[in-house]
Image (cartoon, rainbow, N blue to C red; front, side, top):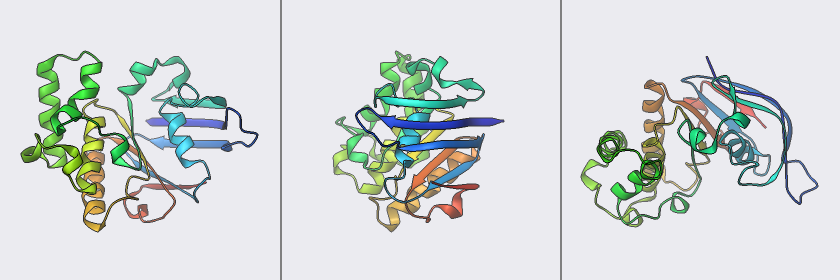
Length: 215
């Protein structure tokens, strides 16, 4: 089944005379890892924002073309519903982490959806095990290494139980150890059926990708 189907997609930010990209057609299979690579400024981040429903709802501009998630056009999916299907992780984990403990960080998204506390606790325990930080659940994310912070950022998205995970240059700020931890986690998520779309200006992720798309 197609997790993502994009046809004739173009986007122009409000106030800009230049399109971020134009005429993109892309199919992403469910449960696969797809790498989107290209030079800085070619529109990779904008593409992920469009898939996540952030463009043009949050980042204003003109979008032409269609994006469907599991067969449904995102224009017909509410932002709240879309946030439970598609999760996005950004390049710098510090921009996504603001809670005093890892537990609080993981609980933030589900709490905003008014999910029952018992269910939130179960999700936190599952995610802490997946990201390997069970023993550090009460630590402040600001005191973690870059790799651990990125794992927490991914974990905060995973507690929303998304079927699709978008990763915007998430290895860029990490050392070798941090990159290995995140890459291993992405491979594990794929084994459990998560569809993953990676964006980066380097080709180092190609070895874990099922398909490579160059912008």
